[in-house]
Length: 198
Image 1 (cartoon, rainbow, N blue to C red):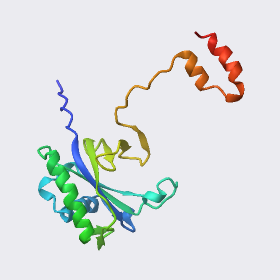
Image 2 (cartoon, rainbow, N blue to C red):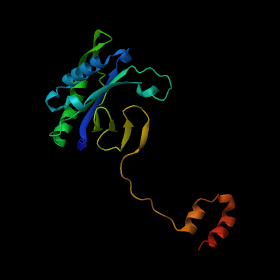
Image 3 (cartoon, helix red, strand yellow):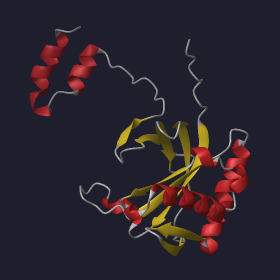
Image 4 (cartoon, rainbow, N blue to C red):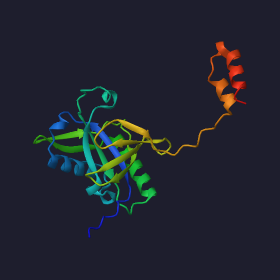
């Protein structure tokens, strides 16, 4: 009888991205090595779970909606080990942001060529959560700890519905709802129609 492995717990993560011309020329082994190098540049090696971290080539933020935009940005999602606490994650975010403002550089290999990239000083680390395995994952990305998150598929840059739980909407009485959606030009007629609902 086959046994199903229990699902992996969600992993806290941070996301770092920067321009990398020719990013799509990276091979699979180069991508893995470049993820490791990016993690090393943050100084958070001891806290990161390399097996659940990953890198991908994405279009620049301003052109992600353009159908044929060049994916010349390298985005690295660094998943923390299960034992890492929320306080450690926040400290890692702050430390990485400081390293970026000071001038964080990453040595990468693209298509067999070694390049050194300086992460833009205005780049801000984002918080994230990695769900599932490397083969079948979803990433929940947050701009910061105060804003809502959106689910982003690992195979698409299209944002899915808001993942936060919302309060149930307030329901108006039928008559009031009818008036609220009626045109002001038809207010008299709407009032008569609404009266029929009472």
